[in-house]
Image (cartoon, rainbow, N blue to C red):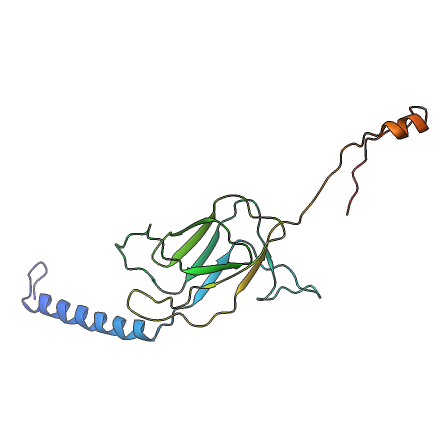
Length: 180
């Protein structure tokens, strides 16, 4: 065949190759499980003994969003990403107001409405019955645990007329910072 000339068999070969690739991809996707590949923010805190483990508790504070990345697309490309279909549950004794949203077809995020409460303990795991857009159910996953910031209190000064009188005005009620 001369350079620049077209073969009639070319489009037929391309179609056959594309069909084979598509059927191979479909067979591959049927075997690809849906699981959690990443949960953020933060890396696990170090457990006793120094090594971080998957079950270690992570810190969460301020308005940190919780983001979960899945191994497969859960919602179909072109779907409404603003649908509030929770991809994961945020299990806490006290409900935390906020909003779920899809960042991509395989990344979901929870944004708290305000700062995370102090001492809050919560566990993040895939929502019960979560499945990909083509029906593959999520595999069981160990929950990822988070803990809100520690509760703190600070006293800057103490006013006591009784102590002022007892010490002849020498008592100073301004306190120095005390480390826990």
